[in-house]
Image (cartoon, rainbow, N blue to C red; front, side, top):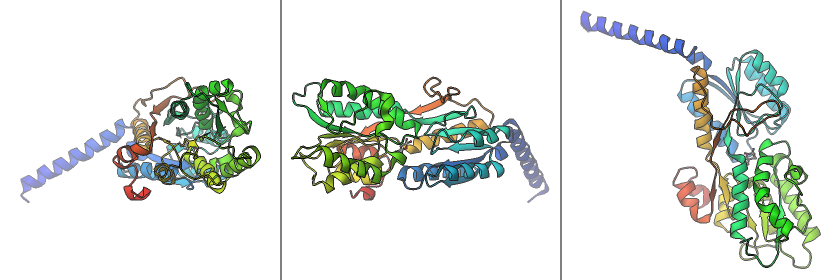
Length: 366
Ligand code: BGC
């Protein structure tokens, strides 16, 4: 290397160092500010595994420091994970809460350290210390399920009553209320009119009563036991259930298992069942004619959105949101970014889930 080239190289290196420090200066210390603690509820559901791993990978690629934790659906475990992340120097917390009302004290700690908090998918309630919320339009998830049943069962022109059962999600999950409200705003008028008959009698009179049919922890074994009870107590003498509102895929799996053990087989006597998430087992059920649809939320898009929020926060930029009215957490309206969910039926599995790379054909036996 000639002296001149060496000099030019040195200059270039100096300029690069300068521009890097200017850059981190403008970003308020971008490198160190991008220290993120992610807490997810459980590894028992596919979606949370994907959610956590996708976001972690993006952040690592951007040279952020990341700590990703799963809490086995145990609230105390999640709280201590968040405490550890605060103690470990996290500057941003991304939290998919288990119980949206249980994080007040730990978030007060976070606020004292000027840590920004993003509620991921599920709103955190009762705390002023939630800065942003990124999710899918949860009310719309329910609307899509309700409208699907309305259209497929032709409720406006049905001449004979249809036996119908409804389920709701975990009572401690704020999303579950929105899913139910979206669906019930469509379906309750048909229950009232008698187009939909609910043999178990478990048909909330108002949206606010949704917790009476909520399945704790979104557990498949619990929805299965509940469906077993409803079938054995209310469907004697060959009476068949014809439609089931299931708010998500984990509950749908339990309901489908219960139907099978009660002797139902896929075909004309199998009820129309809704779902949400696009879990592999449920997509297989859709292909086998045991589930009519799933509401698909492309969790990769949620990860990208939260990644953008994190970048905007660590660069000191304005964080982009698209809803500043819907998600009141009891203390404040949390600025939110809502993404669009969409219906997937049997004939759309290939075009929507496989072609987009969300699932592999081999995952679902195609
Ligand atoms: C999520 C759903 C999920 C459910 C159970 C909800 O908060 O929005 O996608 O199926 O939790 O984990």
